[in-house]
Length: 303
Ligand code: ADP
Ligand code: MG
Image (cartoon, rainbow, N blue to C red; front, side, top):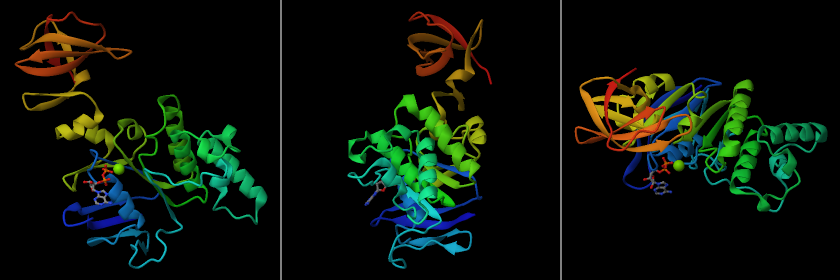
């Protein structure tokens, strides 16, 4: 298991991560979420051994992860890391990049493995293409496949689908996360996208103000977000009488004590998101149809 104990780190004087502790079981999908600048990338790099920690320790099973002061070469064979800025070899092909660290002594296995990985990241037709002529999203997929090539025990993914367009994102996400589960590869995913978490993560932490604000299963945090920050990660929400409600939890009823005036309707595909004013406060709720501006409606919390 990955065991992080009291990890504390700062680039200069101001700490970025303070007293971070958590555990991840083998094979688990573990999500790290937080706003931009909250320290997600820093945490992943620290887990990888890129820094000397100010305090605390990181263990993968029996092995302590050390920083550059103890290691001439950063990183360990059992752990792979895909950075937000991936660094590939631009002048060789996609398949050569992926196979870069696979042994040439087993050419058949190498070919088979490369083909399998090309399929996972949906790049089979680009096998012979030079990396320099790929788009950002395609490069991101090559970086993913290369990290998976030698089948690590644990993989750290920093916003792994951020450069990938919506046409590909859904299927690629399923393929990659299902592949990791199938091979029992532990994964830590830093993201600000709820779709990277819901349906995939076994456990998640929320980073805020240099600390872990919450550590729970996605379902637990979704149903009981506790703070506006956590709720905002999952979707449009309202604070009414100190309670937090998602837009889909507010419904129009015949009569209630929550009387609101519609100001705007946003088409969302299978519903409209309605913006309304309730006691001088803007609220959002979902409705099947578009509503007239200035229309008065009664709302009720509906869980
Ligand atoms: P996130 O990935 O959640 O957006 P980062 O881990 O990249 O957050 O950054 C966390 C904080 O650390 C930010 O305030 C950022 O400006 C700072 N930071 C990141 N990298 C460096 C660096 N190399 N040197 C100094 N400060 C850094
Ligand atoms: Mg980041």
